Length: 527
Image 1 (cartoon, helix red, strand yellow):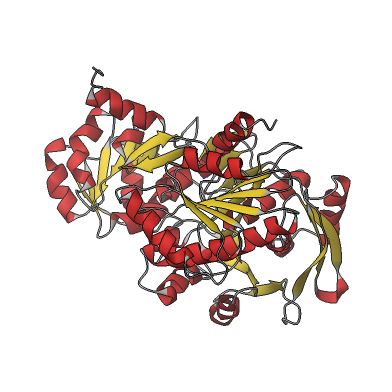
Image 2 (cartoon, one colour; image 1 turned 60 degrees about the horizontal axis):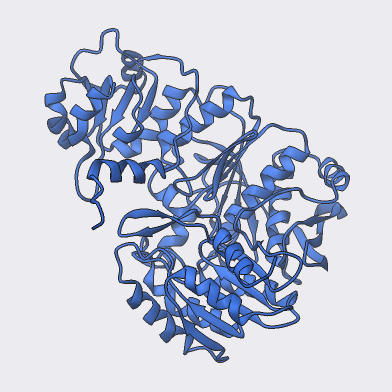
């Protein structure tokens, strides 16, 4: 009989899979009394001689000397854990009136504000001194392309000789240090801790992926971007937003003088023109669409399986020709956006061009973004993070262009996330593939079979009907796809991308689509 795993050991195992929060290695203490005075805060309890060296929302990330922040959550109030925070070394609590009552027994000095989440960004910036000599900050938002644009920005910054940083859905980078990300955009306290750590490493420029949720939930508060970029807007996240208009307004909030100095807007989706019209900061425009009146244009010069070559042309006839090491016009569009963001920050286009020419194009590795994980023989296998209808459309078209045989697609849908896009995801997947394998992704607390049933119904709406298979779990699905593929065929596995886990009933189960795909190929006899 199997031996039961103690709950504490299971919790430790799951926690160990959660990526760490990067903080400064040598934090400098700040006076709690100074914080109270600086912001005119209501403080209860003695603060004489109390010094703080960090700030956190989680007792799991607590360091001695921290200001512990208690926020009302969906199921409980963070201030309920004030005693545990004190035992872990917290020296004070920041919370609301409800939380102050819950934290009273901890006997920690308590700062009371109307909304701890809204106060967190500015207070974190003060504690970590992130507004003292900040790096160049680039922020990219949009439905698709945020991660790719951020990686390409960081790659070009390195080619220009700068020590760079990155905060994306996939990873956090501090120079050569890399850790896996928890959220697309970390909580404000984590974001400012990350920037403080970057300062210790002499990082001069940082590319930040900014989600709509980050803007709605105050995760980038206390930051002021030098240049922000907008990629596109399409159906996604309607579990978080009532409709597309609310989703758009969440993105638009980045184009405000309180958040950014200048902006670059792609006109490749209809919402781009609205961003330009409603932006409250100066913006320049870019497009890959012929005939669109944009200040910068991207033209595809050549497409190969290993790269996409493009020409970027701007005002006064300025231009450069370069390559991005990825397939698809949309990746060239992301590269163009990244370059123009750098120009808007003050870099010379000619200097960027010379740096890229010296290296034969943009040098960047984008984990799980149309990432080819197969060898020189057998079917080509690509793993991609795309999880929206528009992402499927563009990536399938890019893969098909370099596939002399059949295009096979494997995908599933997130549980407990925007269910309204599932039919359209499946329809687009069916229309763009010769063989479709529907499987599971992150079921979370939803029934995986029910999600697959919805996707099967959506696939039947497609004008083109491929061979369709339903295979669970995904380990079996990729092996089914490989068994159906031959030389000259391509497999696109959309959804998991870079992620190293599956979320099943709240547990992060170790899992790598990239490794599963390689294993499936090896088992089938392909090197």
